[in-house]
Image 1: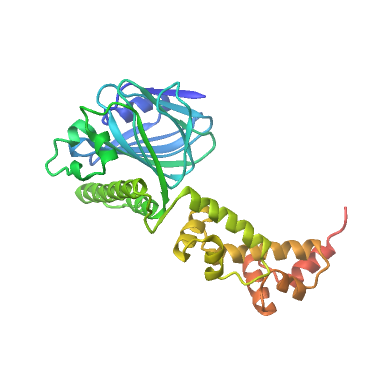
Image 2 (image 1 turned 90 degrees about the vertical axis):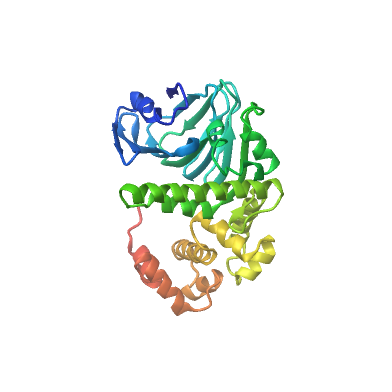
Length: 342
């Protein structure tokens, strides 16, 4: 495992310290630093940009060839970090001897280690990890006019109180696709100069507000419309098994909603999050995969297969099978029969 040690939390120096190990190309434009590397350690891009009042953004899009342990020495001035992973996973230790915890994709994560600790992020090998860190240095942000920190809920407000809070804090909240969409919008910016900087800062503030709101809802045992709890995720996995077992039945959103106890919106959010498909797209793909296997491994007629996978029209089945696999079902079976046995 490759260890990378960062000796302070100064946002301006972070990419320079990373580049001692990554040995890539470091550039700066419009106040935004970009480190690009491709070598024996892996490849990727890391960007950073700092704003007023102790707010910074770090954006990782990396794929390492071996596990990489990124160890930050926090010093006396530590930030509160709002973390959001769009792809892959990370492992986190709030100090070098602490237990590892998994940081999952789409989950709202907030951490604040204690002073003079060594917080650690472990990037897994051969996984494309896309993760955003929004850092807020507590002492600097408290000096901002209209910081409105007192309007945070009691838990988060205590974390931001620089002079009173020096115990490690971590929040692993709900899963939220709406935040993922905003992160994607921020990454997609193609503007230049002042327009780009203002756009990034504006979207960063929206993402930060959404993460704070999700934290507030989580503390009050409620969820946002685009959020899923761990219990919701388990229900989606269980529902996926139910769909397989009942693939021949009519599987409408109301039926699935009743079976799972989740609203139609929650179902759609869950399937998009876990399988990157709408509910109907997921069912359609599953029916096509099962029908293909039955054509290959059973003696059922095409009509019998159509009924068995819950499609009521043979012509519609032939149409979607051909669109998906590029061959009609009857031709697919005939082609398999023509193959010489080994």
